[in-house]
Amino acid sequence: MAAVAAVADELGDRCGLVAFDAEIRRHVRPSRRAARDVVAALFDLEPTRVDSDYELAFRRLGVSKRAFVLVLTDLLEPSAARSLIDAIPILARRHHVVVAGTTDPDLDRLMSAEPVSALAVYRTVVATEVLAARERAAVALRAAGATVVEASPDRLGHACVQAYLRAKARARL
Image (tube, rainbow, N blue to C red):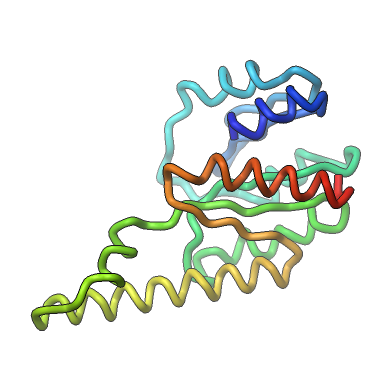
């Protein structure tokens, strides 16, 4: 998020933030040169074990000007992501929505390693099922109107900036 905000600052675009779980935790209203405010709002924010209320957060965005909306979340299997999938159309009617999450390096290692024991085979089967479920969630998010971005933790910022620049180049903002 900070990388996208910094690029928006450089391009003279407005940027804001809504951080939430079951309630709104932080809200930075969109403005120009807001990267510093976005970073400050994120600085001491801690994750919670509370389900996210996407509809609440998306409604907070209101009917503002067409915008690039970046939703950072774990991509889970479709039933766990149902509330996000159901809420995406609230934004997708007006905005360019990108749902971004990290890939799991442990799953990637399991998928690339040759299983050498029964336990390794079971782990590979579970990893395959988890990745297939994530892909079904991504397909459902795309069908609801979102673009889905997944990248390794060290590449996610870059991938989100690229998604922002692609949307801007295609005049989707």
